[in-house]
Amino acid sequence: MGHALHDRVAVITGGASGIGRATAVRFAEEGADVVIGDVQPGDETLRLVEKAGRRALYVRTDTTLEADCDALVAAAVAEFGRVDVGVASAGVSSAASDADRVARLESDAGHVTTLSTAAFQRVMDINVTGVMMTSRALARQMLAQGTAGSIITIASTAAKIPIAGAAPYCVSKAGVWMLTKVMALELATTGIRVNSVGPGFTTTPMWDVAEDSPSHQWAMSITPMHRNGTPEEQAAACLFLASDESSFVTGQILHPAGGQFTD
Image (tube, rainbow, N blue to C red; front, side, top):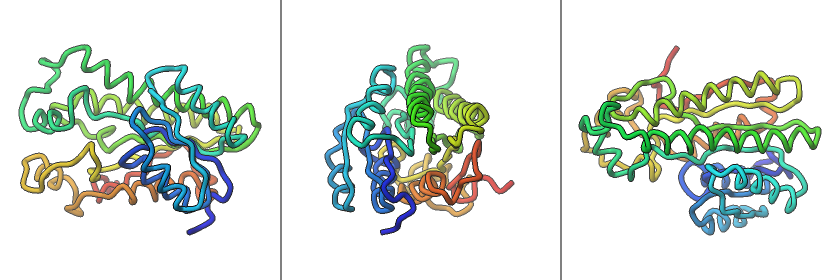
């Protein structure tokens, strides 16, 4: 266990599973108390954080609701007195189930010409507006405290790579990346840093595909390291951006993505 986040308070949306859970555990191992916001039960994440020797709080949070985003941060302050770090990890790949999404990537069923407006809007509501409202609530609290802080959004390599059949996801993640840059500029003189992690293909409930599937084979064709990443590898990138090791870094996106981008 390290001390990179000793006695800091971190709020993580989407912390019940995947990258959010791994980040919560890593932050706890580095000395942070953690507040988990998710629509899914957070019992397992709470157990792992407490196993790491830190305090944990779960707040049921629907990030598409402004009141929930504000209440999550308020609950963190009520329990721990302040917020030092925020990770906006809640997101979806599509309005459909993950299995349906993979099937659509292997056909033309998800193309814009056949895409419903409601399905597109649902992804925007969660992935863009939800991240904005989460980040806004975090920034407002940090400003009220008068303290420095770090806000980390979770984007994707899909913020920069167009994927046929995945317009809602690609557009939403590009929006997250631009939101991150704008907020970083707006807050640059306050001590509040805003950065993004843009994962490549990572083994999570959102990307759980068989190695012999066309989707996996395509993914590996654009991943030079020819493997999926792990949630723990994404959490390590979040830790860097959350810690003082990145004190002069803002408005940037890190891509733990197995070499998808080499420029």
